Image (cartoon, rainbow, N blue to C red; front, side, top):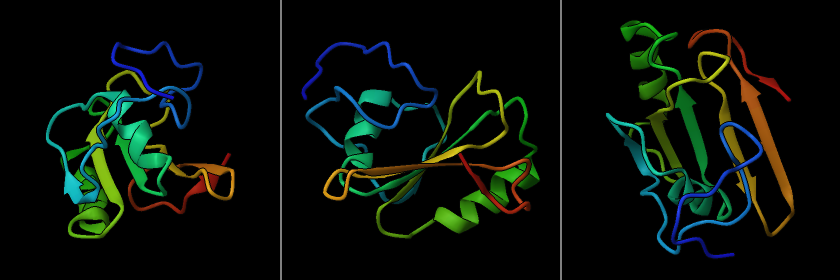
Length: 115
């Protein structure tokens, strides 16, 4: 599904649905600023893992620990996502097998819990 305008997703952060025609770069990039969700969703639908974190709930050390897990790894991206309930949920998706996982982390050093 294509979306050239903003989409009101029913999940935060979103993991599927209408998306932009352009992927968010997912070559192990750590974005310093929030990215357009419609681009991230396109990346997710091709199997990428998006680690989104609430910059108000994640310390610099925690953000750096998460970034170390993403930096330079194919099909991974990380960006701030202000307003999240938990410090750093991540999204992983693959439309070829129709699965999506949301892992939430209490902190950068805790083990993920899938929801």
